[in-house]
Amino acid sequence: MKNILMYLNIPWGFIKQRPQFMAEKLSQYFDVFVYYNKPYKQTYLVQTDATEEQVNLIERPKVPRKTKFLKQIDNVIQRLFLKRYIKRCDTVWIMHPDQYEILKTKIKNKRVVYDCMDDYSQFPHLAEKEQHRLRNIEEELVKRADYTFYTSNTLQQRYKIRYKSTQKSYVINNGFEPIQNIVEDSKVREFLKGINGKKLIYIGAIAQWFDLELIQEVLNSNPDVHIVLFGPTDIELPTLERLHCFGKIPHSSIYTAMKYADVLMMPFKINPLIEAVDPIKVYEYIYSTKPVLVPDYEEMKKFKGYVAIYRDIDDFNHQLRKSIEKVDNYNLESFKQTNTWEARARQICDILNNEGKVE
Image (cartoon, rainbow, N blue to C red; front, side):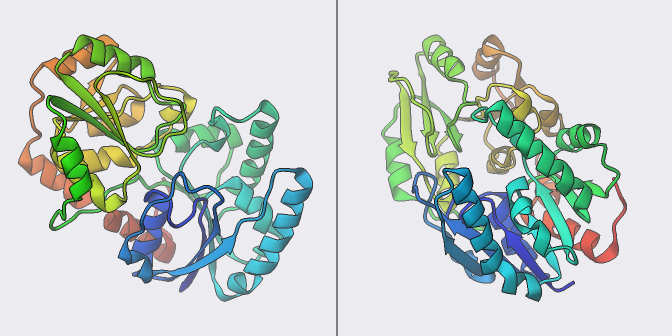
């Protein structure tokens, strides 16, 4: 297997996460063609890193899909557009059930990888009818895929029960990208230096699962604390004293933000969607060596020893007030060696090339 057509479920310039990292790292082992739709909105787009030159990027202007008819037209256009790339590739890498619905008639003789990153039917904005539609397509995809990669154990076990699939599946967790030297983002640095007090920093998308009640209570209970948010915002944030919103930043700037943090946090409300999430930000937080506060759910247990886990708002305040010990250097070195995106790509390469052991 030499060529992979990777169908991204996000634009290449979207805030950098698993799809872009996987494309870059796998391009060291395979000839990777990355197909993505150019977005209408710029909300989640940031400056891309120079490493994009490692992959073959195929950008296509997005066609409106607001009605069933427009979706059908767009599906036909995408099939025609991708036909020549599918012919050139041994493997088609899919990241969302809707992509399979578009391509399934064109990939009958291809090796199919489903890289499942979220329980898509659990996104809170979806109507019940849309949830059922997604699950029906996804069941077909899971049973068709030659390899399914899940980002978390919870996701793998949930899908095995839901779809009663006996196909090969593997848990390939998320990871982080190590850096040699931090080139500081001067705007981020000066913004944070202008805040006097203990800085709790969050980096990532701010959406419906963001725990605004916790944010407000933490600020009320800790008058010396400032909360600083970096990332695109999909929800209306309250106007609170000592709550600061910088906006989105490129991935190359996140370590500048973390450098000036007293504590890094992930204030999420726990729901079925979040319970299956393996957050990239936690790997990156740990790599920064700063104290980290995360909510209590099953997927956080593997980070025990590197993070402080809180059960509720009172426990969050308790964990914040007490001294959070830095993790043992030896253990952190082990963490660094086994949780990079390069390590994840090697796992996948071994599986695809050697028919790895089924988990």
